[in-house]
Length: 342
Image 1 (cartoon, rainbow, N blue to C red):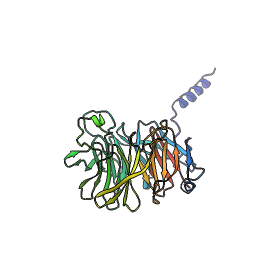
Image 2: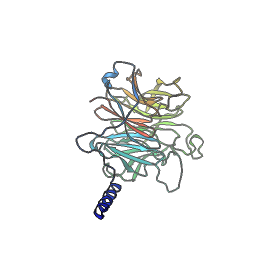
Image 3: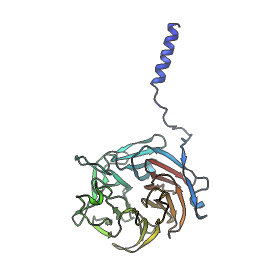
């Protein structure tokens, strides 16, 4: 074999071994993703919400426990928490997923375990990122632009009547700047048995725009997802308890939540289905997209079950795009996208 041929073969081998993987397609052709799950339809009204040919796509995977999806329309970007990793990730069609913010929910130097990162994410009225921080036991605002994230936080609420919260979980803002959040024990290392737990209840709170903290509900065992119906006169709360796997709805009257009742109950669900009532979102028509046993339920504003986006593994939360056409779902270690309508 000639030296020239040997040299040519060496160059070919060297080049092939040092090539980087091809980046995601950033041209006009949209990347394709594998699909999973099925869409169960219980009412023909669902066809107006989710097209008959809609598919659930897996757009990212490999996470410990994904939560708190938030679509940033101006940036064309999805944010989501990986709670045990203490990290917020970003996802775009062009680049896939990347670290966005770390640490996200626990900033103390003392090492600890458990679900210490951020959970629910949202934007305040000024467009700042607001995080439910499990480890720091507070609802906090990121003191940096969305386009240049930094682990600098300002606490918006961390105590009620001098007692530290358990681990704020999910949050929603009203149009006047007030916000509502839930406070289960999941972020405490030993949860209900944690020696640092200061409140005897797991609360649903309202924080007024002047910073005043009001306890609205102290009777739920594991309050989790929270959302406001259009008009902001009703509040829905998911209860992540195997014994009481319910969604509850309350009337809002000033600084009180009244007339609490079950909106829908998952009691008696097939025990082989993964998940419990968890995060949820409501569209402009009052339709509720609620993660729970077996996937994501779609209810109308009165609690009638219209459909179920059924997937394997527990679903923890979801996010709607502003036009209401696309639903993003955190599904344990997966991030899912459902383009419901074109």
